[in-house]
Length: 245
Image (cartoon, rainbow, N blue to C red; front, side, top):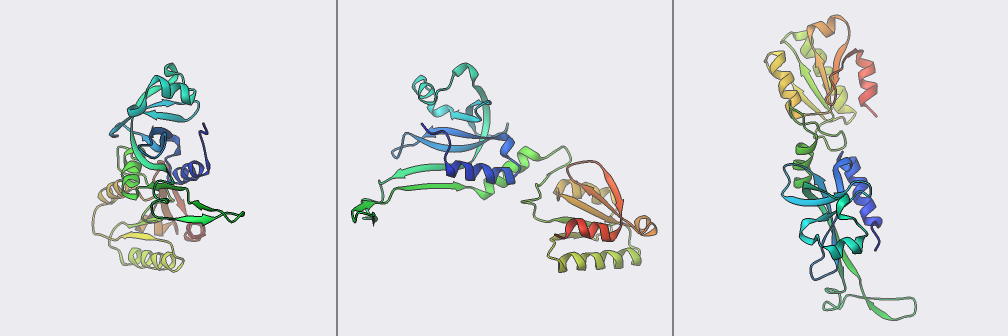
């Protein structure tokens, strides 16, 4: 049995970009009326509705629905090596064979001129389910931590105070970012800094940029990446170099 094919590799590359590959297991499940197995991609999560048994060394798993001694032998797995986990299914592959192509007369002509039915398959990833899984898997006690590759915005621009110079500086920075096709969430609400920072952490955009009277007095902007606690004061030009590719 082949435990990995090109479609599997494609899915795993996608999950790497989503920040989920560390928690994602190719999982053998029932292939129904189409094939012996279907291939699910399950993400380990206490919020999951599925139960799978994982082999951490081989990075594969078996869905509880097909866990039998015969399947273990077929896949070359040892039950003692498997760990039971809750998981969320975010992708799958089904081998459909010729079940639909033959009745629909979906044929192709090979190099020898013979007519043959198309061998079909289906694979997919649920975007809504993936978003929920990212939130469940990558969030911390402050809120969401979006991976840069799927974040709804690139930068969260936050002003502190209602000083005109702060607003003018932030407006100019916002315009420069948008002109360079950087997606920006601009928070210029009249709220305390703590409230704005809490909302920023909750929303989870990868990079926060703060403009205040204090940062302007030092001719700097304050930046912080969502996935760590380090705060930096850098020049506007340096900031633009970091975010404009």
